Structures are given as structure tokens and as C-alpha cells.
Image (tube, rainbow, N blue to C red; front, side, top):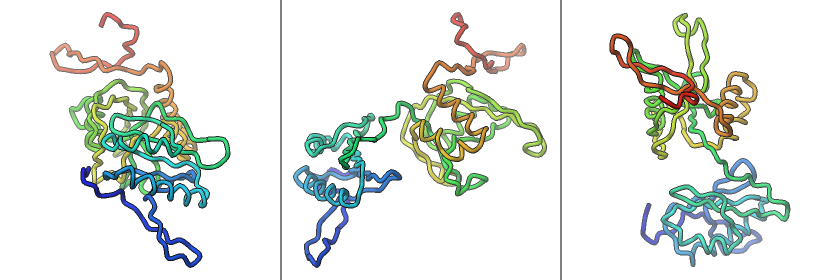
Length: 271
């Protein structure tokens, strides 16, 4: 982030009807719901920002835009009060930014409330899901001699850069005649993030993001394919209720080797 007085990235909008005046507008990105998202990435004084915001709002209203979102990183908190004075309200806050929103039409506000749970998802560069637009859970193959819980942590780290700790196995699926004609076990694991800054794996991952749980569940692909729908619904149920999966309990075999026993530990208070 720059601490200089350079301004927010802007674009010039030519005023029609033969006027030579040019109006500077904020550089907003259109979303899928006739809205605009503005992310402040460089320092700008409120005396400069507010006129730009007013001109942009006027333009967006003429274009029929509905929700306008402004993402303010914590280091630019000096803009919060001026933006609120222009009709924006708080939508949600995270440790490093505040999201404000303004509903432009003279109709009931239909902007969604902030999601209470988000899920880490990726889009793959290769394989059967390449180019489909599907946001899926990070996946991978367990290495020889590697425990399931450790493999889940490793794969998430490799694909997204996120540090995490294992919580439990939510479900698993068995299939046959899979890799090289062998049977296969696929485990859906829940991890707890220890970091949040995504650094995607360039060789395999097209994109990665934290997605609201509802958006992940409601993807068209998930709704059309039963297995994916079930997995998504299990994740949603876990985030909303007391669904309990299988925890990894470290133990040793009779020969003294380290291993894990996976089971529902909620009723074993003495462990």
C-alpha cells in the first residue's frame, strides 16, 4: 500500500452533447447483479475522493446500477465518515477492511446480508473442471505413508498458501475402478484457517478465493450433480448446526507406530 498522496485509479468519462468538459469517475468493477464494487488501493484525501464519488454515483444511477460497494482497507479509515455522509452504510467488517454499501434505486433494498461463513474454493487450470467456472474445494492425493489429516493441511497449503489445522472428517465416499482400476476413498475434511491471505499455486490453480457459503452451495454445477450437491449441503449444514464429523485422535499401534483413530469424539469427554 502506498502512503503518498497519489489518488485512487480513475477513468475519464466524456460528457455527451458536445460538451468538452471531462468528468473523472471512480474505477468500479461491475458485479453480476447490476452493482458496482470500488476497492480503494491507494491513499486519497477525502476532499478529492468525495467529489469523485458524487460524480460516479450520478453516472451509475443513469446507467441503472443498483448496489454500490466500497471496500476500505483499514489504513484508509479516514474515508469512513465522509462516505457514510454520502448515504453509505456498513455492510460488514473484517480484520483488515470495512465494506460499505449504498442502494441507489427508489425501491426496497434487496442487498444480501453479510455471510456468516465463508469457504475456501479454487478453480482448476487443468482436468475435467478446466474452463467450467466451477468453484470447488481444494483437493489432492494422499502421499504414500501420509495421514489423511496431514494430507488435507498440505494440499490446502500447496494450492492456496493458507495455513490451517485439521478439525474433522465430515464425510467420505468410496468408488471402484478409479485410478489404475483401483478402489478409491475420497474424504471431505474441515480445516480451521490460521491465515487468510491467499497465494494460489500458479501451476495448477486458475483462481482462489474465500466465498460465501450460500454462493458456493448454489452454484449451478452443484445443483445439477448429486454428489457435489450433497458435499455442498454437508458443508452448509456443518456451518449452521451441530453436525459432528470424525475427529483425528493421535494414538499408537501395538508395535508403537504413530497413527490416528478417526471417530465422533463429542460423547467422549474423558479423552
